[in-house]
Image 1: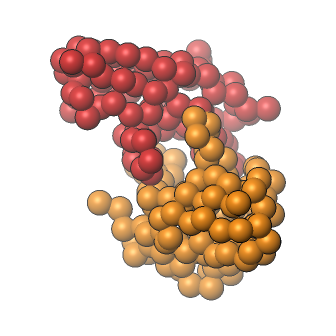
Image 2: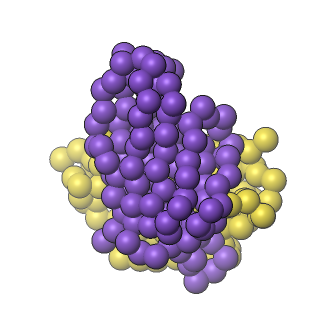
Length: 115
Length: 110
């Protein structure tokens, strides 16, 4: 069982609100990620981190920001939510596999709806 | 650009065998992953292939041909709980993330 947690599970908010999606992992993984997934669509990387004080933007342009002050914690913040931000947000952390790849462990996700 | 192709939907009968194909065209390759995702849940790791050939893990097997840019996931003795989306993802060389396909939604019927 992967020990990576996201809160809240579901969130409905009004336009213009500031929100923070929480993600924590207890596996001691250095690398963490935020993905965005719309129904029936592929996952898109929006942010990732190599470790404490490291944050990078992913492939998908996003108006969100992230921080990595502690290894286990990787919150994502939207300063002013808009209906276009309605989506599922998945947090993940990774460990190396026996080969060169990184095996990702995902949290249960946050389903965000902006009205 | 990167491209991963998978069938959108498949249906198979309980107890049968199903093969889900994935073809990819990417700038660099550092391994291919298969994930299972039940509706409304997070993806969970199924398999990883970086060398050509077949990797078997219980009822699930995954095959890779790097020269053809092709992989498949084979599910045997299908169970109703196998109804889910199956995501093919490629790790790009020098990149720090997986590039995901849109997934194949598998429905297992009695």
